Amino acid sequence: MNPSDETWDYSLFWKEALLQIKAEIGEQEFVMWFNLEYDSSSENAIRVTVPSAFYKDQVIHRYLSLIESKLNELSGRELSIDFLIKKRDKPSYAEEQPKEAPKPEGSTQNADRNPVQHHSTLRQDFSFEHYVIGENNSFAANAAMAIAKNPGKSYNPFLVYGGVGLGKTHLMQAIGNAVWKENPKIKIICVTGEEFVNEFIGSINVADKSKGAAAFKNKYRHADILLIDDIHFLQGKPSCQEELFFTFNALYDKNKQMVFTCDRPVSELKTLNDRLRSRFERGLNVDLQPPSYETRVAILKMKVENLNIEIPKEVLEVIAKNISTNIRDLEAALTRLKAYVDLVHKDITVEIAQQQLKDVFGQYKQGNVTTENIQKVVAEYFNLSFNDFKGKKKTQAISYPRQLAMYITREITELSTTEIGMEFGGRDHTTVMHGCQKIAERMKVDPTLDSTIQQLIRAIKEYSTKV
Image 1 (tube, helix red, strand yellow):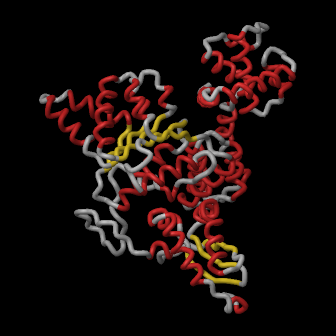
Image 2 (cartoon, helix red, strand yellow):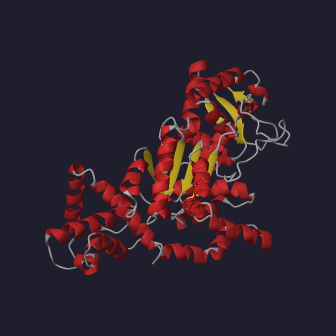
Image 3 (cartoon, helix red, strand yellow):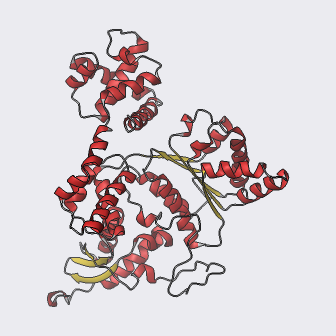
């Protein structure tokens, strides 16, 4: 502390503010995110330490306004928070608070030094602490944290859907990890849709079918929390769907939490039986969108810290600008750069990153959405020919899908209305503007249209990564 700061001690206000915040947001969320430690004060600011840039960014995004508001109420002053990144060995204030989570049975770990044993089927790194929240996933993440606090009490079932590599599995397992941390005696089952199917088939292909079926039912219908990844794998498998239907009912009646992930809304699973579909839709269904540029940078910062390598911010920004698809592709780029550092022993610069990742960047640029891709997907959806969009026919059966394709093109590409008109058979830009306006007006009176548009956009982006 500087000599000039010695008369300013806001540590009591800081501790009281944390106590009030803890009472508001709950023990679990508080311990998860308030990895903060009082450092010093000046006349109008409090300095606190955080263990990493990732924590700093997350606290600022989630809680800074709440913290400052509490401090202002308690101190009667406009106090700001200054963050100092400082790796520490001792626990933070939040970590020092006593916990009442029961010890796992049979654990040989030293309870004073080591954390609770990890669940055998949950990835340790798939936690809320390692989940970067942005506009694309804030609703889903907040719902998941609420579920982890009170599993089975609300948002049951919880279904997260979206394209590959957007963090569905991470979010699902984060719920399991958070609950397990509080109560390691709880029975959590985490499987993929494929594993569920294979296990069910195995249970009926044993010599004693009744015993096999009984063992399967006993396992799944007595779970406290059931997590199933990629339920779209159950399409076209009626017997497995029927078994999951009865499992669902058994758990739901006992207020046991269920969480599912899917690569699309369940309404788009064509060979899913209606009664199981209605069960999935009974709870909360949320979608994950590709992360924004700012969120991609935040994700990369967090991943770099986990990999324990030094990569300049400018390099991370270059990666974020060139890879906009999903988190998995961002991780792949970092893995390549880490391999370069390990093998060549050179620091990563923007030039080196561009050289090492030029084929990766080129791959994603080739996968960018094009007008042709939009036209093909929309045409297939309406059972039209791709050439109908460029033709002169003005029947309602063609003009409406054409206007919809124009509207989507304007929404997800950077083309001007003039350029869009040229892509749609050389039409004038005023025709494009009129078509987009017609769709916008229709959305105001047709509540299902926005869902259709989002469905088409997801299909277009998925198609664009394959061609």
